[in-house]
Image (cartoon, rainbow, N blue to C red; front, side):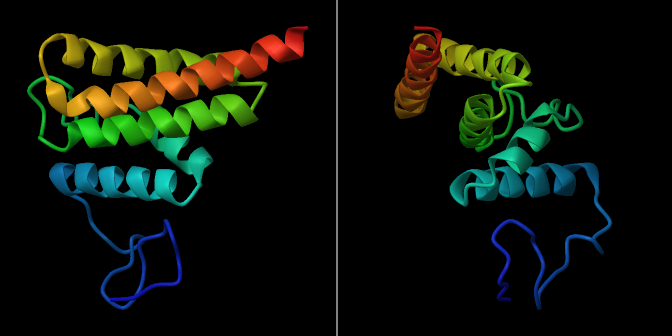
Length: 138
């Protein structure tokens, strides 16, 4: 179906408010919603989904589903974006982003070539955020 909403999954085919989730379908829903939040600039929603701990056991970095790394990348982008815009919760967001970035970096060190571009882009986000913070302190 079609929908005019960018991150709310509702339209002719489905409505996210009416779905009864199973544990696996909720994980898939969270994955899609997080990626849509990242792509359409709704970083607050993506960061909120990132900080919720409910789906962690299904979306593990090591031994999890194959699309978990894409989810973790978009999740980390949302959290970095919120750290940039929300000064009152910056430390909370940065701690979450650093943990996720470290996990992706460890995957790269353990010879997973599929995460190289994720690690490089997140390193650039982290450097830009650090540079902005350093300029404010001058």
